[in-house]
Structures are given as C-alpha cells and as structure tokens.
Image 1 (cartoon, each protein chain N blue to C red):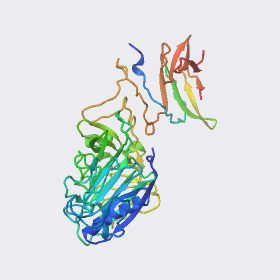
Image 2: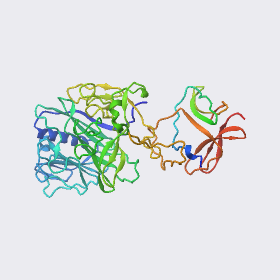
Image 3: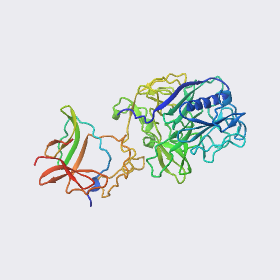
Image 4: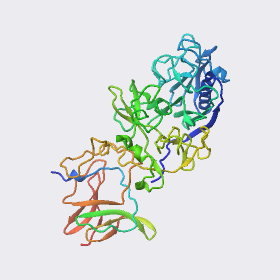
Length: 55
Length: 448
C-alpha cells in the first residue's frame, strides 16, 4: 500500500492568515500564516511546539 | 467572502425606452436599439434589409424604427433584417420574421456564413445557422404581446472585445421581463476535454417565469432542459449543433430556494448568496456533459415578485444588476446608473459570494446531489489521480492551516510538481520539499 492515499494535489495552497499559532499536533507539521512584527509570514509548527518562519 | 470577480469589461446601454406603439414598431425598435448598440461598440454590419431593399453589402438600412419594423410572415416574404458580425467573425441575425407583429427570428452563424436569400429581402441563410428563436418559420414574440399602452424598456451589454453581447427587455408597467432575452457570447470551455476551437453560444430566453429567465425553478427556469427559443442556447462543438441549458451545483436538490433568500450565516450573515457562474450543460447526443461556464453571469437572491426584488435591483454599489424577474440572476452593471426597468423602483441589495470549494476541479470536485456524492475517501486504498492540468484556483477557498502528517520516507519526485512533506529523521521532525528533479530541501525543523 502506498502512502499516497492521503495526498491531494493542487496548484496553489491559499493560506488565510491566522491571528494565533495553532496548537502543536503529534505526528504532523502545521503550516499557516500570520503577522509577525507587522509582516505577513508563513510559519511551520512542529510537534514539539517549535515555530519556524519558513517564508 | 466578497463579490464575484467580473471577468470582462462591459459597455452597457441602460434604460432605453421603447415607446408605446404598435407591436410591429416596438419589435423593430428593440432590434434596432440592439443593432445600433452593437455597431457602436465594435460589431460590423454584414448586411441589412428595410423590407424593400436588401443586400449583404455592409450597409445599415435601419435608419428609422419603421425601416426595422417591416414584418414578413415567414422566411420567404420581404422583411426587415440585419446581420451583424462580432470580433470572432460570428454572425448574429435579427429578422422581423414571424406569424405576428411582435415576432422576430434570431439566429447565429459561428462561421460568419450568412448570405442573402435568392430574394434579398427574405430571411438570410447560413449553412451553419443555429436558429435561436423557436423552430419553424413563425418566429416568436420578442417584445411580448401586451398591447397599448405598454411601454417597454431595453438594456444592452457588450464587452470591450466585441465578442460578448446580451439584451434584456422589460414591460414598464410590471418591471418584469417580457419578450426575448438574447445574446451571442463566448464561454469558458476549459472544464471539458474536447478542444472547442470557438467557444461561442447564442441564447434566447423568454420571460418572466413560465418561459424560464429565472433561476428559481429547476423545472422551468434556466436550469431546465433547453427548449429552443424559450430557455437555453446553442453552440457547435466540432461541427455538431449542441443544445445547452444552464446548471449550478448550488441548484441540486432544489434547496437553493431556501438558501437564496437568506443572508447565510456561514458567509457572515451580511448579504444574500451570490452563486458562482453558471455551467453550460449539453443534452445533445454525442455531446453530453458539462460544456463550460458562462461569462459574468451569476445567480443571486430569490424572493417573490413584488416583495423585495425585481428586475433592476443592484448589488455592491451598482456593480451588478438583476436582469431577471424575482431576482435570482445577476449580470454586471456600470457602477453609476440607476436601472429603470419599469414603474417599480430598484433596490440596492446586499450580497455575498458563497464561493464553492473545488468548484471546477475534475479530480476532486464535490459534485453532489440527493443521491450521489463524489469526494475522495481519505482512508481508502485508492490512489486518487490528481488533475492533469490544474484548473483555475480563483474561486477555491483558502484554509488557515495545512496539516502535513509525518511520512516515513521521501516521496518520489514527480514531474511538474513540488511536493512538501514532513519526516522524522534521527528523532528530529523536519519539513521538506522535493522538486521535480529530485532535489530535496529542508524548509525547517523542530528541536533536535
């Protein structure tokens, strides 16, 4: 069995900005956007709670 | 949520009074107003007839209403007619031909092939003609049959490329559609698989309710099975004449009659729903399916006539206008003019675009109705096939979080795709991208 059964395809993933960081989830990385110091940034939240600005 | 995006740049002629007169003169007036408007906005006259003199010589003989009002009882009697050509080279025929004074005969030739009949004052012919009005030679009423005194009002739209046009006529005393709504327009055919060299359809609707220029009735409205001249339109798909009706996913099950008069809470509760552009669907054998989307044509609030909406209501600072009775249809408007469709004053309506997730994605579309659903099952062993060609994402809803579950190995690179995923390597969770050439980048990582 491939792991592709959860894969979706799209040409653009549109992220609507959030006002807060989502709580971390075990076994998953969460990608989202919000204002950081007044600038809209894209962030990743890892399961251990780490938040990294990726874009 | 906001208002839908108007795709074309429209020139609009508004509030044209078709003065009370004989039905023959009112029919001629309607056709002449339409022709003059088109000729002033990029269309060319291929030929005309004033009932006495006629030729396909590029001469506009409709210099007066009377010269556009000579009726022929059938296609082989002298009559007023005109053929105009759009920027696609498609011809639109307007002929005062029919069994009664209010009648007309409208047709189109996507190849621009209209030629004068052997007797030039008779109705022109084209080998690829798509007759838009009712079948036969008797035509159909284009201005309604209400006798004097019965002023009509005419509205016209043409886009800046001179490839899309549409016309509406209303009865002043009722602020309702009357006669024939018609047009000749490009549509977006990218949703289906056949290559259509020229995506143009001509349409005719009669109104207000029974004929079908409304979106409120699945059995008699514009979503009903196409009936030539009454509701629907026609095109040629690789040479095959194809009859089309309209459809919206939102209409399935008839529940739109509930939603369409509610300021839906899930869209913020601040406006009535504006549904996405209509689909054109074919019911012609060998051409079954969804043909495409109409351009700049939505549905909007439904409410009973005489209560809150009527022809001429506007949305979003007059950016949109209701062209059909009982609301429920929406076309672009000029942002300035107050529409006067009749004695009943128009109302500024509030609206909101509902959007429709995965609206036109052929692989993951959520086309549903009462008895079937088509959505990917997230826990099945079936590997969904992604869209070969990504479609427009203009109306695709956004999300505020994308959740990537950890996977145990790098996925294989895919041609034309960038894959984003997360893995745990050496106890450290990290986010990666793999590009089509196999290059893997680490985008970020959690604590080691």
